[in-house]
Length: 354
Ligand code: SF4
Image 1 (cartoon, rainbow, N blue to C red):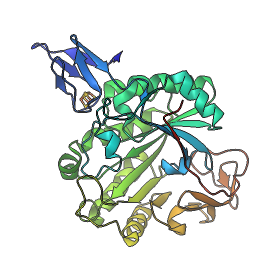
Image 2: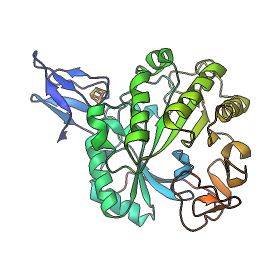
Image 3: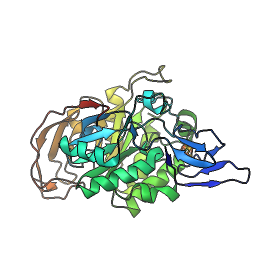
């Protein structure tokens, strides 16, 4: 248990947490919506610091990031709890768990960095549950990683206040932000959060930081798969963030409290991708399906296939130091100097190490 940041005391004695836009008012002995921030002896504490629910070595493409150190592995882990209440949560066993209920191990930042180095991972990913709610731990992890030359990746819903986001992302190299829908109705009913703060985070990331940004939109049949909504989302991304921010339209599978919907048909994802390309986005992907075209990075100018993928596997790589190998157009992203060899992606669970 550690002292938490970003809070103040209300006139009635309750603590106001200002880490995320939920702005929980928390009484003595109680926890906020995310479970892992509690009031003890009149102070806000975090139960998430140094408590992980397990480590895995994932392909970076699984985050998903297609334009950041492709073909590399990333040490991936999370804690318990979440600050959103998504009815379709695909990691609900940890996001809905209290830290005492979740299997967890103590892992200080330096130990985690050592593990990443030993596993030959050039990056660490804060993922599985939302790293916003364990911001104090993320900040120390990212600083320790940077000191050893490792990159940090945040996989997040972007539901964080302007007050906290600067420090949270200070040493983060790349992020995938889950833009869950493009309507307030979906956000308020299905995620128990709001759209506007997420859009605000996206604009801030793109315009005020050097963090590499990609966006995921999980497409759920009947809830956020309307053509007009997809077009509005893509148009907004192009206008506010620019055409070079990659967007991943990924397939939903029934889970947690949303089991009355079918899996997303591949055609729906292909349609979303087509719409986003029509709206001018340069790099649009489908995810959680086998779709060679939808997984491939094409040159926006000459249309050459530059990085061919199937799911998380890299099949072919034709970038030359970050530029199109055919016409020379620079491709947005963080690319290695050396060509990436085709590789089959593997995921390895490390359990509760270190
Ligand atoms: S971080 Fe947790 S406690 Fe703080 S406002 Fe958000 S949900 Fe509430």
